[in-house]
Amino acid sequence: MLVPVPDDVPPLRVAAASDNLADAWRTVVPLLARREGASVLILGGGAKSIGLYAAGLATAHGAATVHYLDGDPGRRQIAESFGAEALAAVRGGYDIVVEATSQAPGLRRALTATAPGGVCTAVGYYLAAGTRVPVMRMYATDITLRVGVSHARAALPDLLDFVHRTGFPAERVTTLLADWDDAPAAYAAKATKLVLQRDRLTGDAGAAGSRVARP
Image 1 (tube, rainbow, N blue to C red):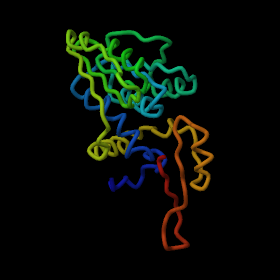
Image 2 (image 1 turned 30 degrees about the vertical axis):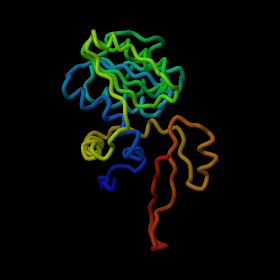
Image 3 (image 1 turned 180 degrees about the vertical axis):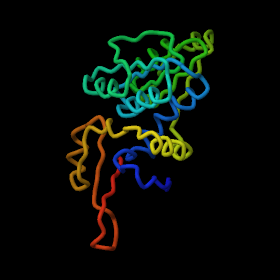
Image 4 (image 1 turned 90 degrees about the vertical axis):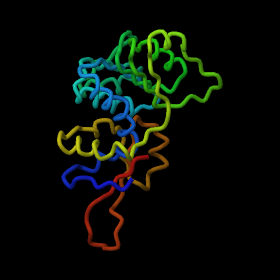
């Protein structure tokens, strides 16, 4: 994961690049490259920051429609700041769907909202045994469901280049910035996106700067 960050990219902007931001990247960016002007739906609330990053990346990569569904008004506001439209209820017929509720009902809702030939990516995991999916509907409409961990390292070069070129404001998703020594209390706050920061690790006592760490 040791990929150089361009010197003029703020560390806070890419604090999540090696995990949550890269996870969001794989849900929308490669698909939009193959489906110009596609419609995108994000069901948020479970994998909180991933859904928000996906909303921002989908908008920035030319999706014709980016709809975001989440019960939290703060996260809806962040999604709208990226140019997504917050919804109160799920509609259907989306080419690309990101399932970030991490709940079985959300998974079924996401698949139902996926258009024929569309792709639904689930970025969470489902602990309940026997999680049901509408396989017959998926078969009849040729829907692809992708479930599994993200391979963040493969996405990092293109992701960092994109942030460098465009100034994509990923830091908007960070709702809590805390000092390293305050990590226990910061985790207990259960923020949408927590980023920890601490002084640069160096043997030179006079060196300036800081490091950020994604929880």
